Length: 248
Ligand SMILES: [Zn+2]
Image 1 (cartoon, rainbow, N blue to C red):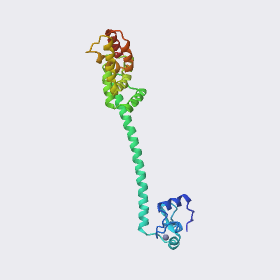
Image 2: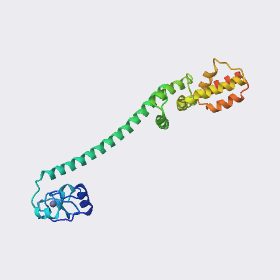
Image 3: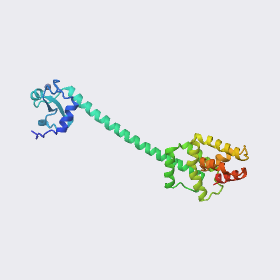
Image 4: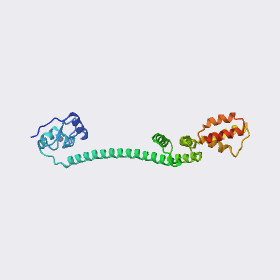
């Protein structure tokens, strides 16, 4: 006969809850019946105090059952269902963790891929870890396509033999271009700036929008541009300023 250990209160509670405080043999319920915890596989036959081996039983059923091994299939089904539920929960948790890991992995792959594509615009240069950390931030705001599109626009400003400063400016203009492209009101603000210019100075209608767009794409703040449009003295000065900004 193996030593009988007391069933912990928390375990008893879990078993009662699982069994809806109902005797699993006769269906008697608390508080009408006094409920005990019954070992499915008796302690005398090696049964332990694991929840899976425990069952809610009323005093009468528990007393009558004594040490006889339970063959009731309903109880076995309950055990099986409980195991299956536990397994299901564990599997779902594992799936969730795997999913989260794969998303994180996918994101890092995308960061590497984006960095690699940017490197193609600046042969001989690499996007270092600090650069990749920037790319990671951009990807939180903009899509890969938007960043690539911005890189192509930024590339137009890159001189044939760019120095480190050119490369820095190319790199950091990428998120600025993304931002400008995103802003639906940017075009409207540019038309507003054009209106101010038209009222104040001679404006070359063929060039004005393109000049402003290029300057904004290169990082000029639209509101700053509007302020400038309010004070610039003539078209030549305006065009020169826009070109200077656009060309870094
Ligand atoms: Zn009973």
